[in-house]
Image 1 (cartoon, rainbow, N blue to C red):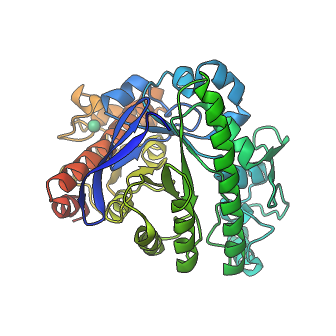
Image 2: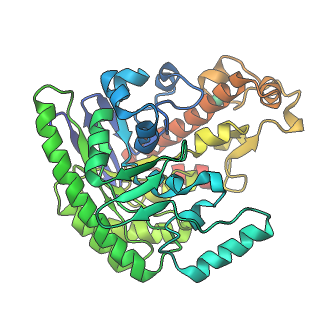
Length: 422
Ligand SMILES: [Zn+2]
């Protein structure tokens, strides 16, 4: 995997400050990875992302496969050329979206219910179904997503067409999308799954990861003949909330020729997540970068960093921007209690001429946009409002990560944590 390397510059306990080198640039870790689902971080341009010092983006293979199609992206020079972001990019395997979105959004089934409705513990599904019924939501037990050891068959949430997804197809699509870092296909289990299913699913995930690795190694041969820059692949640790399965899965991924390690399916609740990360950390070697998939709350980031996680992707900072939630640094009153956020559409900000963050150095705040103005934009659903809140929120995340890196480098991570967590 030419062009890729990972170096731990300074470790403090399990927390580490490192450098991840890719053919499209280097990333200082621990890093936050903004989500660019449809080959765009919603509401902002690549130059805005550069300005706030975003280092690495993650795009979703499932979405880009369905629309515009991997060929379109490939012909445009891969994601870097297509979306005009010249820095490092990750893509996921598509598995999580195939298994969740592919199961039929138009039928109004909640994510946890529809996720493997054919395999989850029935009594727990019924309990969830009852809860949804009491809220007047539509319940259906129809299956739109079939999982076997060989493949997943799913229905597109866009047009209802049926598609097949395999490790080989995921890798082929990710080769075409051309991100620097790609992920092996796994089966993400949900908290609804019992021990028996999780165990079976883990074996399937491991088999899929081996098939992914094999397809990846074949694909790299083609790339070496001049079809674009090299890629690196991460394996994924699964195993639900079960200690032995998590440890077994970590050993499995460690023993294969993956460049890095992703941790999947850890989003159960915060206590379980910390346990999972402890078990995984105990089995990790020190020389591979570790990515925590789909988790990036401020408290989760501290918990992850302290357990050796090097990067985090999470749609929350950008998603909440679009409903008017702005992230608050500690100096702006951000704390665990208010989840480091305030809703800018609230009446109290109607005439507040201060910037979104009083000491914030983000382009939106330093250019002088006021809370009053953004309050007006959000209430009027003006698109510029989304742009300004997104820039501000991603900047706060980057600032947090810079403080964490500095904290590790200068042996004062505890102080940084105290400042943010109280
Ligand atoms: Zn700001």
